[in-house]
Amino acid sequence: MSSNGEVGIEVKVPKLQVLYEDNHLLVVAKPPGIATMGVPAGKLSLLDVAKEYIKQKYNKPGNVYLGVVSRLDAPVTGVLLIARTSKAAGRLTEQFRDGVVEKVYWAVVEGTPDTTEGTCVDWVRKDERHRKMHIASQSHPEAKEARLTYRVLQTVTNGTLLEVRLETGRKHQIRLQLAHRQLPIVGDRKYGAMQPFSQGIALHSRYLHLQHPVLKTDLEITAELPKSWRGFGIKC
Image 1 (tube, rainbow, N blue to C red):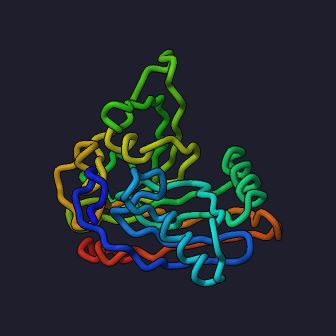
Image 2 (cartoon, rainbow, N blue to C red; image 1 turned 60 degrees about the vertical axis):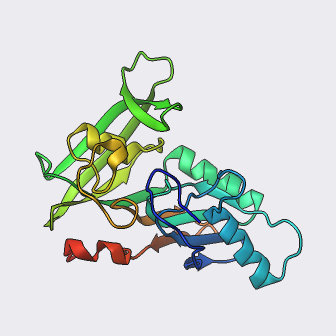
């Protein structure tokens, strides 16, 4: 089975890597090259894999409810949060909407930022025809504000490792905002990268910190880097 055309790699049905699981939540490490959800008929999504995992583990007949709270682009890896009940999904969505969830990504970019720390604030809009996002003027009727901060973690082979913290959750936000500053993510040809990457792109959802939707306890989830990142010589 092929992955989406965006990354152009072949994807086998992945084994689900579970990072956290209880009656309310399923948190997994997403592999590259598979869409989170919303794929055409006949293609596999990670949500499909997760539902099959729940069916088999708990011997559940019929349809399984799972709600993706914050999806990742097909070529992106890392922490993916899934609700197992509609109540949990609603409460988690509220946390994301209120901006109380701490979302940390790691990205290897081509080039070096001008400063070791920075804030990116832009207005962005969707381009449905080309399945990408664009920087827009604030006055554009479809424009939405996109905010993130970054800091340099280290210089790596053929690039720079950044820690990125999202303050908003726009489609392709990190990819677009960094590329707009001449810092495209390695492997991300859609947004101007020149360097290839063996699996997807070098963008990884590293860490989530949120409140458990039912237990009300702090929940911190970290996803280890994929094997495809080993060539960068990361020491963190």
